[in-house]
Amino acid sequence: MTDTTDTTDTTGATATPVTVRVPAKVNVQLAVGGARPDGFHDLANVFLAVGLYDEVTATPADTLRITAEGHDVDQIPLDRTNLAARAAELLAARHGIEPHVHLHIRKDIPVAGGMAGGSADAAAALLACDTLWSTAASQDELLSICAELGSDVPFSLVGGAALGRGRGELLTPLPVGGTFHWVFAVAEGGLSTPAVYGEFDRLTAGTDVPEPEAAPELLAALKSGDATALAAALSNDLQPAALSLRPSLTETLEAGTAAGALAALVSGSGPTTAFLVKDAEAAEVVASSLMTSGTCRQVRVAEAPAVGARVL
Image (tube, rainbow, N blue to C red; front, side):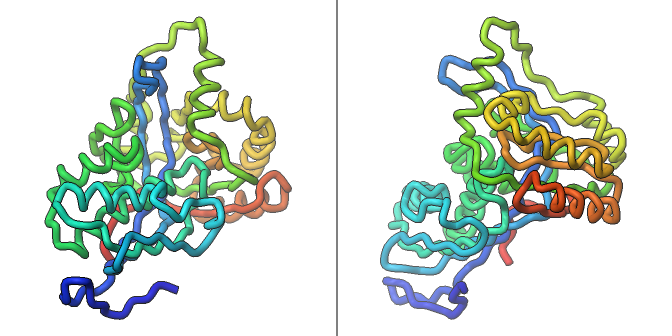
């Protein structure tokens, strides 16, 4: 468990550990353009934050240290390659201080599941360290650091719903008119995001990949809170690539649809699959059916939208 007692840092000042809670995301639309010269792809990425959360606690320490507990923590790095550690280092470097902090990650977002768990931890660590060190970084500075860390990190900071342009880091907040109910099926193992993009490039080689644009009908469905309309507009250009690399996900998608989901899609680069349902009761039915289908190892139920990273 996280130590929540007051501690004294190396300067003699007393500081209370800071815990930040941060949500997972689902991409209700992921439109992908062709590969750019820098290897990235232009996106029209409609993010929706969902109520599955990680927590990151920052405590003064003599060096930078990462620990973790929760689901599948054996699959995440506990060294300076962890995005949370990199977030602390970047913030410290900008303010001329040493990144002496113990970051404890409590995982509940699926690991390597296309739900931005690592990006969420980076955003949470950034906010936790900003609060712990009293660096008083502006929102613009925090978002700049987030964009340097990765395409999904800025959205993890702000939450709600947003359209991500560029490689996903240029955000425009979107209005959401109601609560959407989701079921997520967690697959065995992960899928490498670069590998999925590589497969996308292979599958689209020689074709005219259109410029990515947000679908007006999808944005209207979000704004109105109409789950049926949103279900009809969901799309993920990476789904064919994810299914090519992991064909078994097709069975999971079919099982959730057969159980009554309004729509099913691969979440981001996968391999988690996401099912939009009518209401909380339908979510329980779909979740139960997915668990008994034998096509996934874990099922999670969540509502959206959720707020972004917040100090507890």
